[in-house]
Length: 115
Image 1 (cartoon, rainbow, N blue to C red):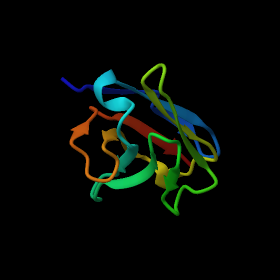
Image 2 (cartoon, rainbow, N blue to C red; image 1 turned 135 degrees about the vertical axis):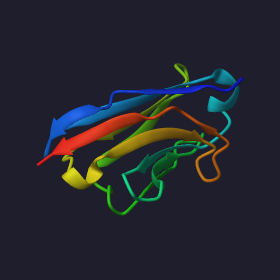
Image 3 (cartoon, rainbow, N blue to C red; image 1 turned 90 degrees about the vertical axis):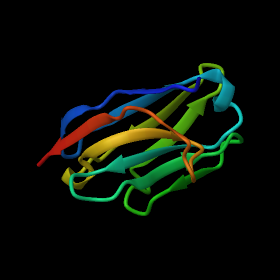
Image 4 (tube, helix red, strand yellow; image 1 turned 90 degrees about the horizontal axis):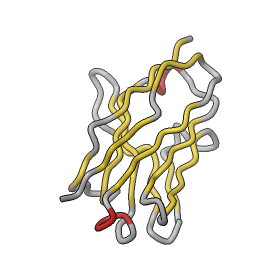
């Protein structure tokens, strides 16, 4: 059974940084592109960043230059380094696979950015 478990969320002041992690079961991690989504209250879930099994990346315009997605295939772990955080980054962040049409979701980790 595929499992995705996020961690690393929290409360941070604007301009601060957080690093999210997603531990994935081995059967999917090395094959599929993985992604980070977020959903703010009253808004639709959106794709924030994605990374292919080969390391190619995608970022939403709103996070380009501030967020970095990476993966450690040996550890079956996906990361999202978030710098220069803004209040509008406040949301529940989810790890997903495959990145574009997810079949599997983590439980989410809350990120709250205070102004």
